[in-house]
Image (cartoon, rainbow, N blue to C red; front, side, top):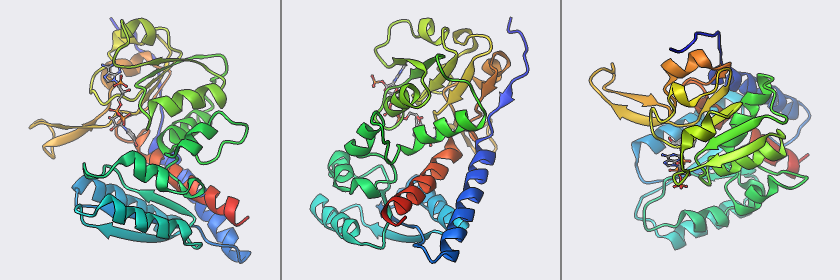
Length: 295
Ligand code: NAP
């Protein structure tokens, strides 16, 4: 039987609103001082509905904080070569401070080629090898947006991390791998990384003071896999269809929230936890890129 404790719900929506307000304030100050206003450029390829929604939300966020933005749309038949030329153009446009290419890309275009083509000082998604590697340098540059958002949540909820055992489930280039490095370098945690080939996953998750999950398998983490009092951060977001949901579908995390929450000290909901932080991180990175280029 699960013993009921009182947990703190980590409210990503509130924190992301706080961050947007702080950024809007800094933009207003820059404007008053006659300094450059941050400018984010977004490239969207094809007409995937989910990508369109993500991009719409990014544009809306730019408007909220007072950033300038440029939207560039191309058909999904665009060749990699032509896309590279457009990227070059944005790389060389002095007015653009931050620049993202919305993923996923059509199959004939290499994500790696495109990512590496973006100038690292404008790479506000923090995807380039240069920015990825800078996590372990003395001078971290533009941080991968989702892990950056997770680190902000831990920081703003004053969650103790130093010397704690953080177990990261999922080791992707986008989420788990950079998050693990950030937890070591910036939060001084002792980190275990688990992935698809990990034998006896519960053995590791049960020893976590902080459990962070980025897999994309709803319900992967059950209550028996979590230590009493653990901090639980759920990065997973999977669209699940079902007649039981009002809209016919719902977004689910990797953690069985209902049964895990009573054992946790802090826990993120899905949606409304890590998700809203990714856009907040993108805005923070764009402001940082602007400040680095135009102090
Ligand atoms: P991904 O590239 O598919 O990576 C998934 C990772 O999970 C891989 O490292 C994989 O291991 C590992 N894995 C697969 N099955 C596993 C299992 N049974 N046990 C342990 N590890 C397992 O996905 P991703 O891009 O990292 O995204 C992961 C989830 O986070 C998705 O639901 C995604 O939608 C969500 N996400 C959310 C946001 C946000 O803004 N909230 C941002 C990014 C991602 P291998 O490396 O061995 O294959």
